[in-house]
Amino acid sequence: MIEDKSPQRTPIESLGEFGLIDHITKNFEISNYSTVTGIGDDAAVLKHTKSTVITTDMLVEGVHFDLSYAPLRHLGYKAIMVNLSDVYAMNAKATQVTVSIAMSNRFPVEAVNELYEGIHMACKAYEVDLIGGDTTASRSGLVISVTAIGEQDADKIVRRRGASDGDLLVVSGDIGAAYMGLQILEREKAVFKANPQSQPDIEAYSYLLERQLKPEARKDIIKLLQDLEVHPTSMIDLSDGLSSEIIHLCKHSEVGITIYEDKIPLDPTVITACEEFNLDSTTIALSGGEDYELLFTVKQEDFPKIKANPSLSVIGHVVDASLGINLVTRDGQQVPIKAMGWNSFKE
Ligand code: ADP
Ligand code: MG
Image (cartoon, rainbow, N blue to C red):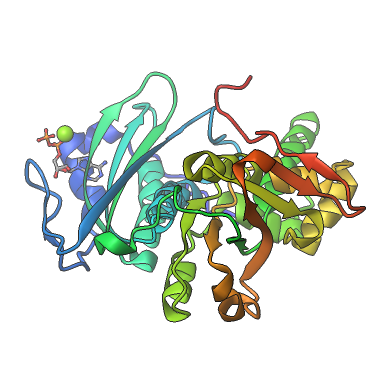
């Protein structure tokens, strides 16, 4: 995860705006039939045969990332992932992205290159086409805005609404690791500030750091559900934290949900890091954000199809709205779940 810090600093002015756009977009290839015209014209032209889904997410320096520990290559990759995650959460196939950046003119061309290397890596790995964007100057830090486009048959799109009493609540992968990765990065930054000679000791936390710096959108889970012939009744991706996403599903579906503390999937390193930081791992799983896993409900009759799958955990079930949203703790107590997720307007 260590960056090869290139000492070269080519000013952006030496390329000019158009030269810069040509430079950063030249390696991108088109891999989707639905991209008719990509970068270079006044607008891109798309032709999907199915329904189109579209989503936008913006990453702002100082709010969503800190350049002192988020390498630009990872940031580019993550900016694409957070958007693809929203497309997959609709049970759709991601096909195109646009990327708009606002950056200080003090940024050298090498820095923009790194950012676009990450974007390129993500587009290639997930088979999405970069079809346009905008490039402008910023006087207040780096801003990256991505729009992702995808497609799916109208009747296969899965929304936040659609869960009903008795459905099972399922989460992919494990949760809480991205949040703990951030805690490690912030701690190491503080240690480094106090003593610039110190060597960060991060070997043991590589999984947590990877989950924070280089998340993967769960394209594979969408494929898995299709292969298993499981059609979720409702779905959302985990960006702000399990508790707030559960609340969204309940609100949109007009249901309640009960989850079980002992069913929440945690990586062992999350448990170790929580002990070290004196944090409760269930609280971290419920409120730590940026997991980019998928949270969805399925009909009970689909249980046999998913129960043996190591990537899927049934963590609870849907109940009548009147019963509310609750966590059953390890010792059998029932506690109401409140929104505790990450919120960028919170100070
Ligand atoms: P216009 O002035 O017509 O908006 P631009 O000069 O901004 O055109 O952009 C030229 C082309 O380059 C367009 O296809 C646009 O979508 C694309 N483009 C501009 N900036 C970016 C970027 N940061 N990433 C990807 N494509 C970009
Ligand atoms: Mg433009």
